[in-house]
Length: 210
Image 1: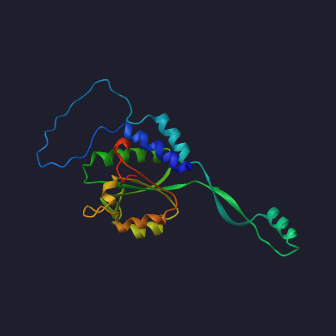
Image 2 (image 1 turned 60 degrees about the vertical axis):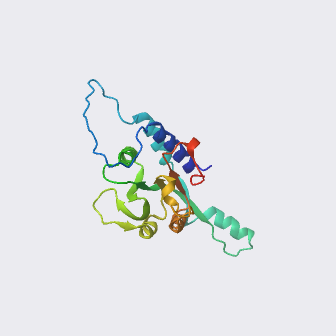
Image 3 (image 1 turned 120 degrees about the vertical axis):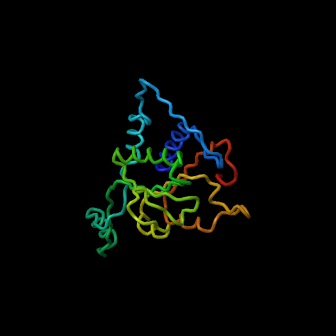
């Protein structure tokens, strides 16, 4: 299991532990009551916990460099009888993340909860670009609301080097008619490191999640 997958798994468990709401379709007019609780000043997210998670997400990764590793180049050239044999080095960079959040509408509490978690990570200097989508990620809407919608293909070109994290139910990735994976899932292969975080408890996972 890679470090990215391990961190995403820990992040998912925290998300699952704090979820108490589930989206349900209804035509009934909601009955809304406002309840005030005095003396309650607990933060929505424990700052210490998210600080540790953010530290893991910020852990630098090694990527190939276009600069020569002089010592190794000389050594390899000598071993090759004097034929120039370049050896390129590595440098460490901060990883960047692309987050796609499945949002049914503007009042989607589950999507807002995820947005707050993303904001907490961004506050702790995790580099994140975020988009919303409604069931079908082929068209995504920027979380900032300041840019026009983008096609997933365009996002893949712009953020192809990022680590991809998708918050969604797995059901929407399968055809409701034949139960087969949607053809557009192939777009996700543009990212070498990717993870999907679903709110469904693991004990209730079906063939879609597996």
